[in-house]
Figure 1 (tube, rainbow, N blue to C red):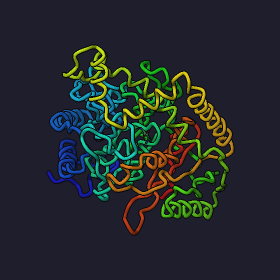
Figure 2: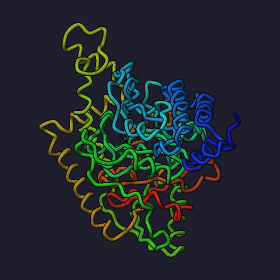
Figure 3: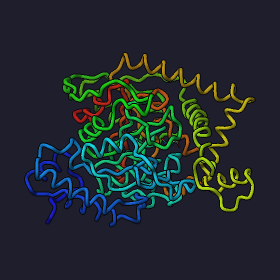
Figure 4: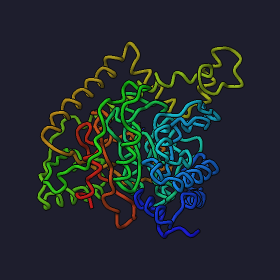
Length: 478
Ligand code: GLN
């Protein structure tokens, strides 16, 4: 059966309506997505496609719908990809790392359980940076992911495969994780919307940990209402994650859609040596447009901008060094076949199993936690985090939304920054604030650079539990 034109870009309500009217069947939709995935295999977005399983599930769900249309879940018609650091029972999960190659999960993450219970279909697992450490999806044992807008360039990271899976029209929503920008920045680089909910909004049970007090599951898609529906399904309290918030997720659309809003942005978001003039100009244009539309738009001085990225990397590498200690070839992870002694089991397994970026971060994290340096680095970074959090609380009482570019730069060429890792770390400057403060943040497409055609994203942040306010911003951004 022919599928409607442009089906790969349909929103969930459009898909559901097409199935209802008989223009589309769920198996037809899954086949179409799979064809797109295969046609773009060279972009390396997927580590594995669950083709047969997705097709069978589509047939079963279509039958369920035919028998009783009212019996299907909220995500009926939603086909999603999951990042390769989210556990799915009976399926492999590797965090793009050699140390977990071939590992099959015994249980499913809470998000996976909830997706399936709501009748979503999981189409495959997506490529990413090893243990979600990176900003370009270049640090993966499966090789780099490529940006569909320009395959010589990176799609962002660490959820680069997640973004590209949506970009190429092989699923409706990609589920990723965001510790310091990993959902928002690839969404921006690929011309999509990406939401990092507030810390604790979505259970982390079954997400392979990078830095537990920062990690948050998030999602990438084309349509904000689809992200809102998905959040309402996968978010909320969970007995398996004590950090998951007990607060309900309000589903109602914000009533004040036409009201004038109070926006602010930080000084270093319009004036910073690392800010590409193309991004700067696009961001400034948006600020002006909001002002002209009658909103309040004010600049706020943020005196600690130079400490955001350092504090983030000190704290996250410290947590990573602890979280990743379980992969030792004994408790978890591949054991080196060469090892003769116990000590060799540890050292060889970890040396062979972890890539260079992960090893670097484990070393850095161990260093900043060590007795002699703890006070100089770790506790200083913690203080910085407290300052950010307190500053933010006050800010959010004065403004509805905080704006920032998502990334100071456009997607770079694959391999271009291999020799300059610090530049890559510094490119996280606008995203780590939300993770340090624990607040929700949404990246939405702003403009395309007319010369290169590359996409530029803008980030909107709000106070805790205001994800739905962000997800109903369509009136402002389009
Ligand atoms: N680029 C950041 C890092 O490398 C963010 C990664 C993430 O959010 N998982 O740590």
